[in-house]
Length: 576
Image (cartoon, rainbow, N blue to C red; front, side, top):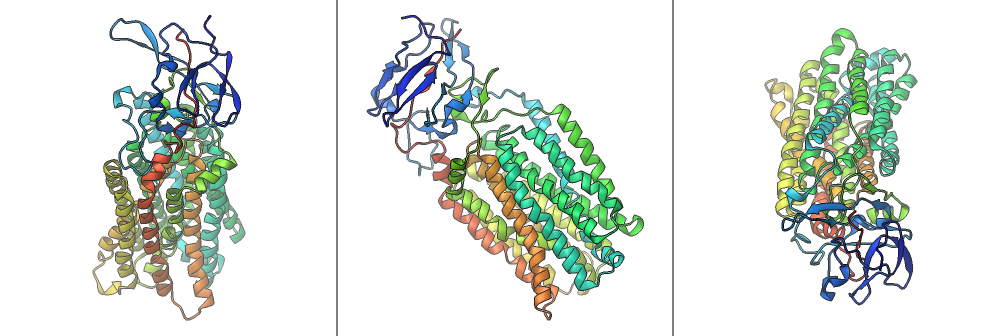
């Protein structure tokens, strides 16, 4: 029989008896676990004949990463046999299917989805290939990191100078806390929450580099315009627009990271980005705290915005969009990633439901609300609290917040490093480690808030705030790395967006909660309100620790189909 071209269709029968047209050449596994040759026959140019596989080989663990291979296309890979030097198709490209039936990739011996051991031997490092060279991927990460750092620098530019701004607008102390500390901070994160979902969804459909460029411009343009505001409503408006970009940044960034690095390294890279955002936040706060007394509270917005806009244009012209799915071993085993590779799978409502039904997702996302309450309050009120209630100099107060940010950076780096090592060794240990760190973070911060600092040397707050920032930070890189590991490439953006929503809600609700407590309970001081909100780290750590019960199963479920016979075998294309 004459060979069939790669675009000719053969029909294969599904387990349920339905039929779908599959473009390519190959075989299918029927419900009895037997491999039947497709109607088109086999090709003689060294293409493996799937029908020669043993019936028992139908017990395979199946990669859900390429569930609908109609959306994944690629070109055949030619390798030289070490024996004879002849070309053969070692890695067939994925067939194209016109139906919406799930096609799962066989990856070898199937293990229980609860098994801690790897599902199948991981693709050896020397066989892993990425279409973007290593040096350029690290350059891309560097550009993303610096851009994110500069974008985050404008988040807290108001906090060191709340009293100065309140005096200009004619606010009394209670109005200061309500309008500047509560409403603006709450609105900043309130608009960031829906934008995280929308931009996370968009990042699963469109070019993520271009989306990130637009997000930076959307945030830094209003940041630049803050210099010219004269009324409170104008200040509120520009902060709202900045909040939109702030919410959409991380889902896009970490979706990009998922397609640049493999599972064993994602927490390391995520930690680097998290450190950059923390450093940017601390530097921005330091710029505002140290420069505002001499040049005014508006100039820091100019100083921060212009470099960020320049970095956005550098990213646009020098950074490519990485192909989706290229860092998944299940795809690399069965598809050449050379020219012609396209991963076309998109987010859908059904897949969104799968994201919401995954327990590890619920734990990672759910811990964000209580865990972010203290962050929002500390970044909004703590600086002014140290100046007004603890009678510290504004420069000392700003430096205390900078040390808190440095501790957060150390916690992100160390927590990401240790968390990834624990994850690689035994997945269940990592969430327990992170949860314990977060719960203990409340202890040093409660001491700083409640101690009469004027009785201690000026440097007394630095060690406890460093410890508090360090212990509270490990969830950032580890939770996002876990979301990358338990979700498919086309659902990662929306999963990360949901986590950002909860983080933003927590950061926004924290200041609003403090402002509400102060307004409703007039006898309550900021001290008691801060104590209440800082305790949010305790339930956050507990919720994150719960994911240790589910993470192994959820990671394995992304690669395993419970029914070993409900799949179609990959179709081989001839080597040309």
